[in-house]
Amino acid sequence: MSRQILLTLSAGMLVVVFLLANPTWAQKKKDTSALTDKVNQLMDLSAKRPVIKLNGNKFRDFVKSAPRNYSIIVMFTALSASRQCAICKQASDEYHLVANSYRYSQFYSNKLFFAMVDFDEGPDVFQTMKLNTAPVFMHFPAKGKPKKADNMDIQRTGFSSEAVAKWIGERTEMNIRVFRPPNYTGTVALLMLFSLVGGLLYLRRNNLEFLYNKTAWSLIALFFVFAMISGQMWNHIRGPPFVQKTQSGGVSYIHGSSQGQFVLETYFVMVIYGLIVCGMIMLTEAGDSKGDVGKRRILAVVGLALVAFFFSLVLSIFRSKAGGYPYSFLIK
Image 1: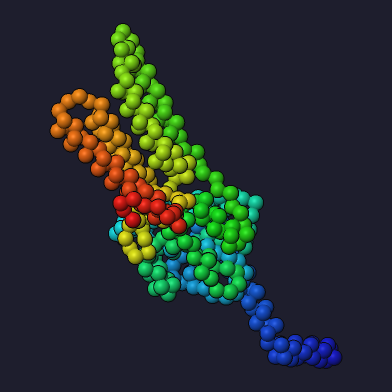
Image 2: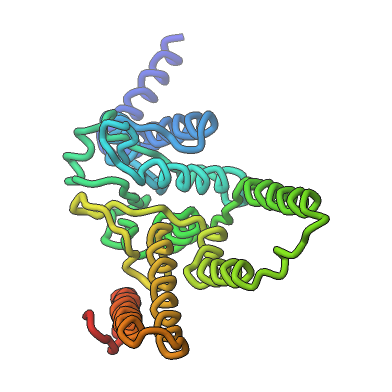
């Protein structure tokens, strides 16, 4: 019996000596256990919602502190109405769309997580990260600190779900295919339009002379052309934001890249094209009409001014978006 006790004590002493002689092994085991707990907690949280809500403590535990063998995408935002962030809600919807698409993709694993920090829930996080604007998308890699490319340049690429997914693919090599829920708004609007036109034709079935009105058909054709060349179809397909908040706190109405545009920007362009056409019509009327010479001269001057100024303006907008474009007219 005493021999068995002696053997047990000897084995225990050997274990103690081994641990004292190899402190790194004990620390490594402790780190492995802590990492497993963190990953399990993140998996539980992401199972409840694709985008994990973080406050200051959770941000430090899951994002900043080691050990970590996973990448995490964090959106810093300010969704409260009192913060007056016009685009934060749109950016949040696009971000959630990417997170949902990842959750049901073949790449879903415990190596990538999506999280969000709202300013009202983690102001200390914004202070630590030295952020004074929102929204901001950052990638925190599994190893090392975030680099410049880990901060998404939404000024250049925008924050559509496709742009966010592409940026994530570049940083993590996980190509997430975005699945947008079907939007039946356009279909319903088209059905309502056809119903309205059909009803109008039925009510006027005994007098359809208005169908031969050249002015009405010309206005309809012009509106369709303006809508197409100003980028309304691109808006319908890509779903860009209406405007975008700049890092300095202002609002950007014109996208800085030729690869993107804002909704309000397309409205500006459509109005400019319309004014250019008005100027051309005035010039044509001034040359073809046989009225008073003074009125014709005024019509020609006004038409020429409209064409020259607004053509210069649309050329200037194109020049600001297409870097290196050398030509301009009246406006640089």
